[in-house]
Length: 124
Image (cartoon, rainbow, N blue to C red; front, top):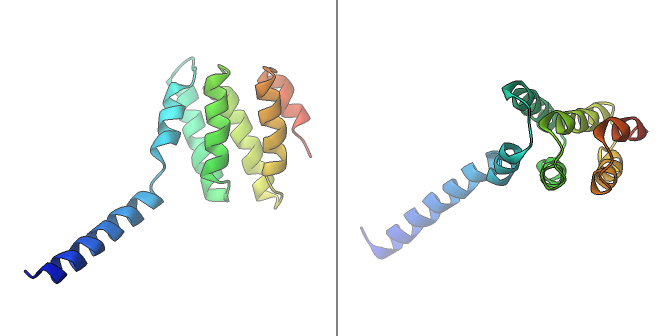
């Protein structure tokens, strides 16, 4: 095989590899989710289902990652994060930008406010 064909083949292969990885759930999101404080496997399963619904409704992976990262840092549970993600999904389905509520949620989390007090305030 000539050098030019090898370069073309490697370029094609590299492009396919990058494209496949771009459509997969980002590894950092999986890692952060695994680090969340949780009582049992049911909480993790609930969060996983809520994240899938959120992504399908159009909530960005970046917003979910920001939420999950701060939850890990502030010791929120998987059930708490599931509630936050559910709220963002609900807004997206209503045609409203979830970013407005995400800001309120992140602010509450940064101030160590309990999840049961953040969710009612995160209404539009």
